[in-house]
Length: 160
Image 1 (spheres, helix red, strand yellow):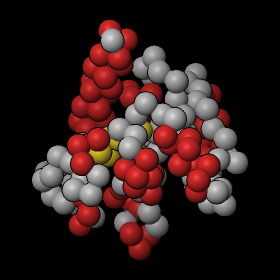
Image 2 (cartoon, helix red, strand yellow; image 1 turned 90 degrees about the vertical axis):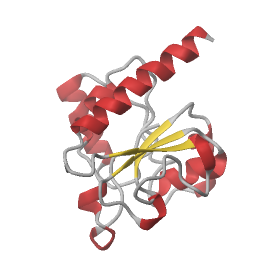
Image 3 (cartoon, one colour; image 1 turned 180 degrees about the vertical axis):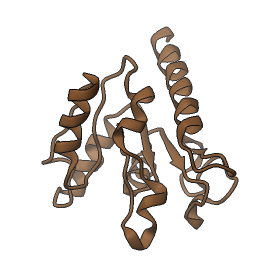
Image 4 (tube, helix red, strand yellow; image 1 turned 90 degrees about the horizontal axis):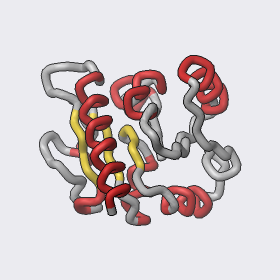
Protein backbone atom coordinates (compact mmCIF):
# COMPACT_ATOMS: atom_id res chain seq x y z
CA UNK A 1 0.00 0.00 0.00
CA UNK A 2 1.22 3.50 -0.74
CA UNK A 3 0.33 7.06 0.38
CA UNK A 4 2.17 10.20 -0.65
CA UNK A 5 0.26 13.18 0.75
CA UNK A 6 -0.72 14.05 4.27
CA UNK A 7 -2.30 16.92 6.07
CA UNK A 8 -3.67 20.31 5.22
CA UNK A 9 -2.05 23.74 5.25
CA UNK A 10 -2.54 24.09 9.02
CA UNK A 11 -0.81 20.74 9.63
CA UNK A 12 2.10 21.40 7.26
CA UNK A 13 1.03 19.45 4.17
CA UNK A 14 4.02 20.93 2.30
CA UNK A 15 6.50 19.32 4.73
CA UNK A 16 4.95 15.88 4.93
CA UNK A 17 3.87 15.27 1.34
CA UNK A 18 5.61 14.15 -1.82
CA UNK A 19 4.79 14.19 -5.48
CA UNK A 20 3.97 10.61 -6.53
CA UNK A 21 6.76 10.75 -9.12
CA UNK A 22 9.31 11.29 -6.34
CA UNK A 23 8.52 7.77 -5.13
CA UNK A 24 9.28 6.13 -8.48
CA UNK A 25 12.34 4.27 -7.16
CA UNK A 26 10.10 2.58 -4.59
CA UNK A 27 7.19 1.95 -6.94
CA UNK A 28 9.13 0.46 -9.87
CA UNK A 29 9.89 -2.73 -7.95
CA UNK A 30 8.18 -6.03 -8.71
CA UNK A 31 5.29 -5.69 -6.26
CA UNK A 32 1.53 -5.34 -6.53
CA UNK A 33 0.78 -1.73 -5.63
CA UNK A 34 -2.34 -0.50 -3.87
CA UNK A 35 -3.00 3.25 -3.72
CA UNK A 36 -4.34 4.03 -0.25
CA UNK A 37 -4.21 7.79 -0.79
CA UNK A 38 -7.57 9.44 -0.14
CA UNK A 39 -7.18 12.95 -1.58
CA UNK A 40 -9.51 14.10 -4.39
CA UNK A 41 -6.89 14.18 -7.19
CA UNK A 42 -5.76 10.55 -6.80
CA UNK A 43 -7.30 9.29 -10.08
CA UNK A 44 -5.60 12.08 -12.05
CA UNK A 45 -2.27 11.57 -10.27
CA UNK A 46 -2.37 7.82 -10.88
CA UNK A 47 -3.19 8.28 -14.56
CA UNK A 48 -0.39 10.84 -15.01
CA UNK A 49 2.03 8.56 -13.16
CA UNK A 50 1.06 5.62 -15.36
CA UNK A 51 1.55 7.71 -18.53
CA UNK A 52 5.04 8.84 -17.50
CA UNK A 53 6.33 5.63 -15.91
CA UNK A 54 4.17 2.76 -17.14
CA UNK A 55 3.60 1.83 -13.49
CA UNK A 56 0.02 1.02 -12.58
CA UNK A 57 -1.50 0.43 -9.19
CA UNK A 58 -4.83 -0.77 -7.84
CA UNK A 59 -7.12 2.02 -6.66
CA UNK A 60 -10.75 1.77 -5.63
CA UNK A 61 -12.26 5.14 -4.70
CA UNK A 62 -15.15 3.31 -3.04
CA UNK A 63 -12.70 1.90 -0.50
CA UNK A 64 -10.33 4.84 -0.10
CA UNK A 65 -11.62 8.41 -0.23
CA UNK A 66 -12.89 11.07 2.14
CA UNK A 67 -16.40 9.58 2.09
CA UNK A 68 -15.42 5.90 2.26
CA UNK A 69 -16.47 3.73 5.17
CA UNK A 70 -13.39 3.60 7.41
CA UNK A 71 -14.03 -0.10 8.01
CA UNK A 72 -13.63 -0.76 4.28
CA UNK A 73 -10.44 1.31 4.22
CA UNK A 74 -9.09 -0.56 7.25
CA UNK A 75 -9.93 -3.89 5.63
CA UNK A 76 -8.00 -2.90 2.50
CA UNK A 77 -5.04 -1.77 4.62
CA UNK A 78 -5.11 -5.05 6.55
CA UNK A 79 -4.90 -6.98 3.28
CA UNK A 80 -1.58 -5.35 2.38
CA UNK A 81 1.75 -7.01 3.20
CA UNK A 82 3.30 -3.59 3.83
CA UNK A 83 2.22 0.04 3.75
CA UNK A 84 4.63 2.83 2.86
CA UNK A 85 3.22 6.22 3.73
CA UNK A 86 4.00 9.79 4.61
CA UNK A 87 2.71 11.07 7.93
CA UNK A 88 -1.06 10.86 7.51
CA UNK A 89 -4.12 8.89 8.63
CA UNK A 90 -3.05 5.66 6.95
CA UNK A 91 -0.16 5.19 9.38
CA UNK A 92 -2.69 5.10 12.23
CA UNK A 93 -4.94 2.68 10.34
CA UNK A 94 -1.94 0.42 9.68
CA UNK A 95 -1.00 0.65 13.34
CA UNK A 96 -4.54 -0.22 14.42
CA UNK A 97 -4.90 -3.25 12.14
CA UNK A 98 -1.34 -4.50 12.63
CA UNK A 99 -0.12 -4.14 9.04
CA UNK A 100 3.63 -3.51 8.83
CA UNK A 101 4.12 0.14 7.92
CA UNK A 102 7.07 2.33 7.02
CA UNK A 103 6.48 6.02 7.62
CA UNK A 104 8.45 8.60 5.65
CA UNK A 105 9.10 11.12 8.41
CA UNK A 106 10.04 14.71 7.49
CA UNK A 107 13.01 16.35 9.18
CA UNK A 108 10.55 18.59 11.05
CA UNK A 109 8.05 15.95 12.21
CA UNK A 110 4.81 16.14 14.08
CA UNK A 111 5.33 15.60 17.83
CA UNK A 112 3.78 12.11 17.66
CA UNK A 113 6.62 10.91 15.45
CA UNK A 114 9.30 12.45 17.64
CA UNK A 115 12.75 13.45 16.50
CA UNK A 116 14.70 10.22 16.89
CA UNK A 117 12.49 7.19 17.58
CA UNK A 118 12.83 4.32 15.15
CA UNK A 119 9.28 3.15 15.90
CA UNK A 120 6.12 5.02 16.74
CA UNK A 121 5.50 4.48 20.43
CA UNK A 122 1.77 3.65 20.19
CA UNK A 123 2.07 0.92 17.61
CA UNK A 124 5.36 -0.81 18.32
CA UNK A 125 7.94 -2.19 15.93
CA UNK A 126 5.58 -2.98 13.05
CA UNK A 127 5.37 0.77 12.41
CA UNK A 128 8.87 1.92 11.47
CA UNK A 129 9.92 5.56 11.05
CA UNK A 130 12.26 6.20 8.13
CA UNK A 131 13.49 9.73 8.59
CA UNK A 132 14.46 12.45 6.20
CA UNK A 133 18.02 13.62 6.97
CA UNK A 134 17.90 16.34 9.62
CA UNK A 135 20.11 18.71 7.66
CA UNK A 136 18.33 18.34 4.34
CA UNK A 137 14.80 18.76 3.00
CA UNK A 138 15.52 16.53 0.00
CA UNK A 139 13.52 13.29 0.07
CA UNK A 140 15.94 11.56 -2.34
CA UNK A 141 18.12 9.80 0.29
CA UNK A 142 15.03 8.69 2.23
CA UNK A 143 13.35 7.33 -0.91
CA UNK A 144 16.55 5.45 -1.81
CA UNK A 145 16.74 3.96 1.68
CA UNK A 146 13.11 2.82 1.48
CA UNK A 147 13.60 1.37 -2.02
CA UNK A 148 16.56 -0.70 -0.81
CA UNK A 149 14.65 -1.83 2.26
CA UNK A 150 11.67 -2.80 0.09
CA UNK A 151 13.89 -4.86 -2.22
CA UNK A 152 15.22 -6.66 0.87
CA UNK A 153 11.67 -7.13 2.24
CA UNK A 154 10.49 -8.62 -1.07
CA UNK A 155 13.56 -10.84 -1.34
CA UNK A 156 13.03 -12.26 2.14
CA UNK A 157 9.33 -12.95 1.43
CA UNK A 158 10.17 -14.70 -1.83
CA UNK A 159 12.81 -16.82 -0.08
CA UNK A 160 10.37 -17.89 2.66
